[in-house]
Image (cartoon, rainbow, N blue to C red):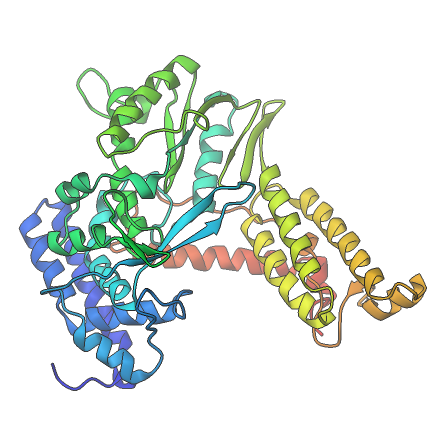
Length: 488
């Protein structure tokens, strides 16, 4: 390979080269030309541009400073150039994962996380460049998790369209797969995932190290791997087809929504899913169908968490509560999600008892603004106001603790200022606390379910532009923007 200079790589040209091949893969999959798919995947995974893009993804994501068992991270240009040069599929051997455990909110049990080495992450990213077009083309149209240009908000909006009318389905099956990532059958993956079989086997059988001991991996894909969400999605794809073949087809076998007398719809986000129907008996039958479907893949439904619910009682999905009140569907942040953000805010304030007000505002704003952004497209105004009030009470206790011998007026004047017509602004000269109630509610546009991110990229780009334009218009018309509240 010729001499590589990291700063001289033409990234626009690299992305264009990869994109051209990915579009050809999509077209080959649609035409069922699997030999051509394999050749095109080979071109991507053995190309200089493919390797360069894979390395860049690894060194630009959130885990770029987190090492695997070898303790290596790529920081200098020379290390990145060497990474491209040595990224070869021939003779590739994966290193064991570094196992850590992370907290689960509200639970004593912890979630296992496997951290690959930088080289293994780059190899996963490289293989994903060839696999993602196949996954997107074969994916269930109602699958929204870990997919290009799709999000939890798209799943929520589709759920709203299914459940909002008076004649919509009244019953919901809340599905929960027990340890999805940890229990996927390796044999099923080897037989059904169209990628380099030897490399896939290395990803699956690499084992993990915990407390300086090596353990084998006999099932599952590592949570923490770049390619794992796509492998999990491909494992669960087929649920929609299975349901439609039984409930959407007529006697001649043609599938059409007009044949859907039982009002059966699937909404899937990664390993979380819900199925709707007009009656409980239909959902009981679907539950048994899905048990068999998942069993073939080494997975099982959690009996404790999988339940049948009436839409009038409501159910939680992706941090929102879906429920009909007097025939009207209301989607709002779930109680669990509200409890989690309150505890997070409380922890930040308690952990910063002696920090400066500036630092505290910075940390709070990251969490508060992020949570409000996630929920900005549902009925959340009332909850935003309540969380703002709770945050104010926590900050008042924080301020009083710092100055136990000072009068209340002195404390108020030190930490809360009059600003742009508002008396109680928790601010410094450089920063100001964000109020959730200033986040405008803007509905999310529904995505075209059959749109492919590689063939219809222009549609997704225009969709994002239109959505952003509506957001900016709503923000400009907001009272806080009109008075320039956040402009210091």
